[in-house]
Image: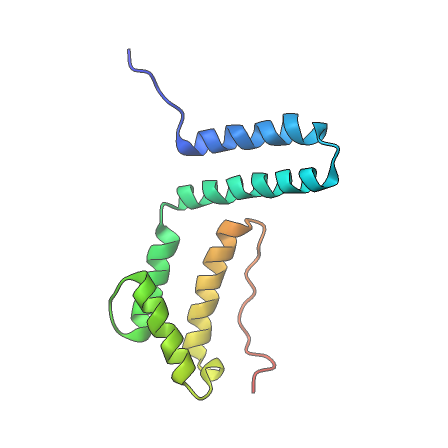
Length: 127
């Protein structure tokens, strides 16, 4: 008979629920209560990153590679994007750059805050 162990996601959820349901209500100190809520939120972020299975980073790498026109490691592509932005006269006017950055930001924010609702880039106010 095989013993089934809980997954990492299940363990994170169990610890998070324990902290929310049993520990948080018993904490009277405002600073400690705040730190506990931050820790609970951090567990949620880790769980969402595990559920994403690295897809957000792979998607970011693909977007950067397409924009820059070359393949490479994510850190290298980020550095090349930084250099591209620094060397451009007005990179904020480049619709392709803005769209790519919006997609990358939306994906990261979806993991950090599942209630985040992406705002379509309009370019309003950019001259």
